[in-house]
Amino acid sequence: MQIKTKIKALIKECGPISLSRYMEMCLWDDENGYYTSDQVFGRNGDFITSPEISQTFGELIGLWALNFYQQFINKKRLCITELGSGRGTLLKDAIRTICKVTNNKIDLDITILEKSERLITLQKENLKNKNVRWISDIKCLSSGPQIIIANEFFDALPINQYVKSKEGWREKKITTKNGNLCFTLDDQIWVPKDSVFSDLKIGDTIEYSEKTISIFSKICDHLIKWDGALLVVDYGNISGIGDTLQAVNKHKFKGVLEKPGRNDLSSHVNFQLLKEIASKKNLYTSPIREQQTFLLELGIKERLKSLTKNVSSAKAHSVGSEVKRLIDPDKMGSLFKVIAITKTKRHLEGLS
Image 1: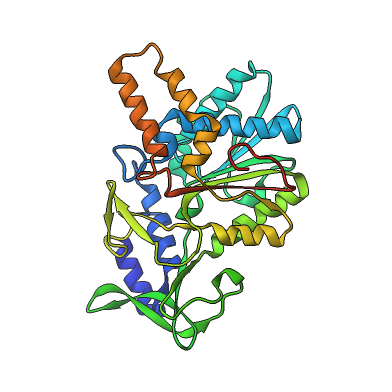
Image 2: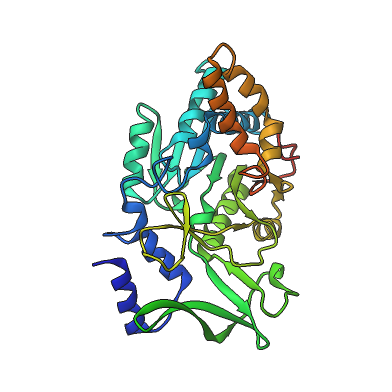
């Protein structure tokens, strides 16, 4: 059964549904969900992530993780967990780089949080002969200090939207009209618990992801108990205000309600809310940095020089264009934000 048919049947039975329920069905339906499709990543897919654009991204993230571990953890075993690893490209580049600079004298323990069987298959193909284990729930994180990497992970988690009216916050839901899916506002009033949503104007829209808060809070609790760091790199919305939900197919924007299950659905991460949650748990949060600043301070231009040395001009231009895409303010350099969460205040390379 097509997802659109399932959604209409659910609305007919239960009434208007939340955006989070809609997103969950579109992305994860067992039969026709978006993440069950054969090709969603890369140049031939619907979107391309930073690790797929340039190997420098995964390499620098790997060096960041290694540097943090050597400075603040100082144990033989380096434990890295990636949340939603795509095809595993970031980890592949990070592992290769870490092994090279340590002359393979470090014990790597790699974990991937992933619930898509299709993506797990791709990751296994890309990470052959690596010491990797897969978990489907953040509660299954192994004990001990972890470097946890969330690159374009939280933006794909289901959200709800709320619009401020004279009476208070009303939830934006999905219903049907004349046989078509459409948006509507719920009659009930929603009361936000977090202070980042206070003092907003009538007509403002805020986005709230219970799943993001749940996963993020569990990671914070893990850091409190075991130490380590969480590095978040994602579409950034510092204020948390506005409708940022978007649908993408073949690198082009589509209507959110258009062809359910065929498009990638995502929203900008509310970094200010993440900081507030971590601060309430007495964790240290780094300043929010743009991806451009973060990668430049990690030495992406120096790595570019190394990669383009003694290669053809065509190859040098191609590699240079890839790096430019990561750091150009008009591309991914400003749109993506970076933050790190740690147990105590520390000097964090690229984020201090």
